[in-house]
Length: 135
Ligand code: HEC
Image 1 (cartoon, rainbow, N blue to C red):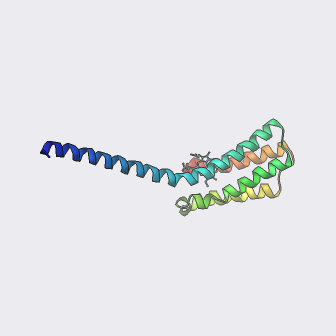
Image 2: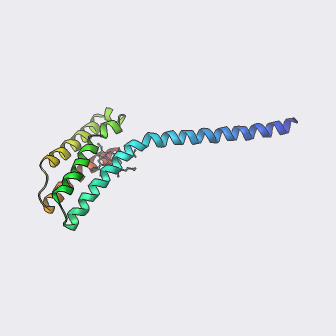
């Protein structure tokens, strides 16, 4: 093979290897973020459903209990989903506080839409206080 041709071929191969490596790295990064984002998105879904019910005035005890149960489960999953951030004492405290508050509300659920709105405002404060620093 003539030298210029060999150089061109090597460049093409190098570019292909570079592209494959870049795709693999971005895949790894996506996977690493998938679980924490999934936990947050599921939590946001149930939080939003509760908000929708409270605004629509359709706060059935069953629906409220089911969504609150999911919030308890998902906030309890924050330590698993954010192992790196959990080494930060303030993050760990925000996570514990959020989970403890969700559990407290679920154990003694609001009986009407007005009560649910109040509970949601305080649950939302727990989301916000952590997001302000860490999101
Ligand atoms: C202890 C800290 C903490 C608490 C409490 C918390 N979050 Fe998050 N949240 C985060 C962090 C950190 C991110 C950024 C995650 C990322 O981008 O990888 C995030 C991201 C999100 C996202 C974006 C997810 C995505 O797909 O990019 C949503 C939605 C969300 N949180 C909703 C909530 C809701 C709703 C609550 C409360 C019911 C809540 N979070 C409570 C730390 C927290």
